[in-house]
Image (tube, rainbow, N blue to C red; front, top):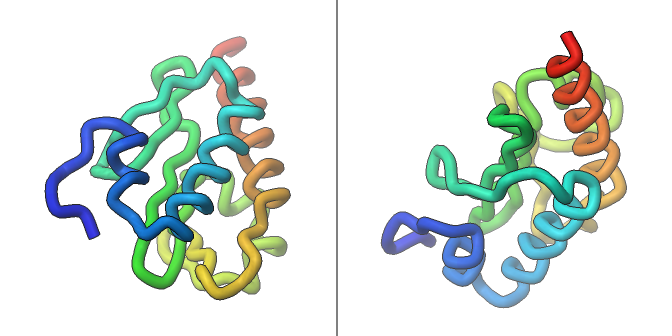
Length: 122
């Protein structure tokens, strides 16, 4: 969908159909609610949230799904809850024709925030 490489999350989201934009924006808002101090950036060509200079989570829009990336540990920790979704190495796909599990995304982000904070303490 991307004609040119986006430089901001706003420009990334703006390139999608309105229905997908709403989903991407809600995911963004969900992440910001849990990690308000996280930095927003584009990394690997997709929206990325960084906390303490470490990647927290990434997400991406596609024609038929939303990709969510909470690597390396977020997917392993929530393996059972993610089992019903198509997955790849370090990724999960949420179909656009099904309900997006925002509550699960929220729990994964909370886990990643806590994990990143523990790394700093060490």
